[in-house]
Image 1 (cartoon, rainbow, N blue to C red):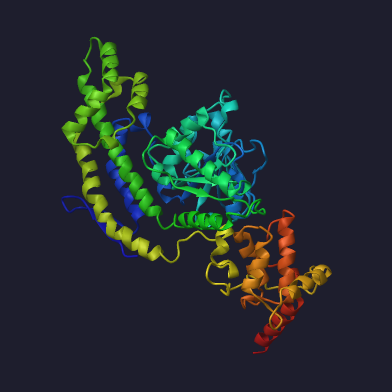
Image 2: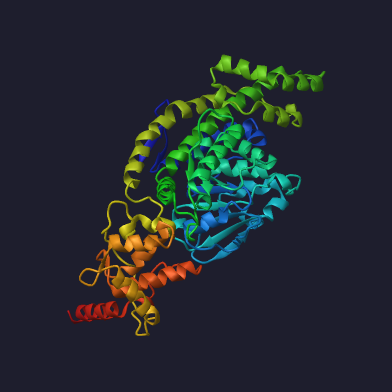
Length: 550
């Protein structure tokens, strides 16, 4: 990618940059960070940004009540467990876990994470030892995590447990993560729609980040169509009370686990909703630079408003006498001060912080630390908002075009982009490479003992010239009630010769994999050599010998 130059108003080059991320880091260090430090921005709002905040992969925050399926949802995406994960009917996830890519499985605990300059968690230290003891990072080799990272969270306490104390400020931690992630997945259970005190406080902590929020109504296969309509309406009504906005939130309906569906009446709806949600997640790497730019602009507007607020309070404070009384009066009159600043400096009301929270923080702050207006710093910030960001747009569009064909989340549940007959409107789509192991074993085929039983099913489906079409196999496989994403993986593994049809051996292999899945075991990412049908082994051995002779 050709390098670009960002220049200030005098035409002087700030720095040659090659990516949007690099330019944003430069602009933040030179024009925003000095203003934040001068007006003590981090004492009232979020902490200052570091290089890791700009360089980090897109992150997904998963939140929800206890037992709404948060960890199961993550396992469904990754198609594997992560170190330290536990799943059960009662609250089992008691820690914040950052699930990130690593060559070997490992766990890094919170105190070590906050001193690692390569991780974007250094600013979590102020939340204290109690929180850090409940925070960890799990590294696993997983293809999904090569593109995104996922944050698993403890379940939000229900009404019955609302008086229990965690020992740290849970909503504040959620707020910190919400400001730093690219997507927030709020999971709701079709059987648990109560709004607890902690849930309300957590939703309040998400305010200002509604554009990142996606609501998922999970476990929807456990209710029939009529009941699902009532549950959906009740959920929308409950969320409307908490969010207090006229806009209707987008709610994805489905059942995000790899077990058979309890009720299949709405299977098609669930698959369409899953496809929409997965498409949204897959686009996160493509939109990562745009998200960072938007967040920086949002932060810059808040910094500008904060600077005017602090300088105004500084001007109003007396030098010696009656300082405490004047401080109380200024805090009480803060809404009026906000209005005056808006009118005087033409700042949008949406750029200002929450007035009640600002008043609360000002009560315990020493006004003597405040400093007056510094026009030079504010001029640099205005230049960033009005000129520098606009100059980045061509580079941003260029990056988006270059990433259009490659930066997509792959692996895990997203492997279903090639799902044979489970692709809508294309029942004979060839799956491409089957990922078969190069080493072909001469061991006995483990499916042989059950093949007579599978052959009976095979011939009952009326094969044509010894093979079943994708349409016939699809109809039969759907009767297992397994999710289409799982059935798509089974098809891809079973169609060894990639001809869009299954012969008797491939059909037996598909049955074997379905039985494995129904027994609760995971599917292999690649077909092991001992599962390759015997005729396909001989063909592969013959092809290998021919290549060697040539």
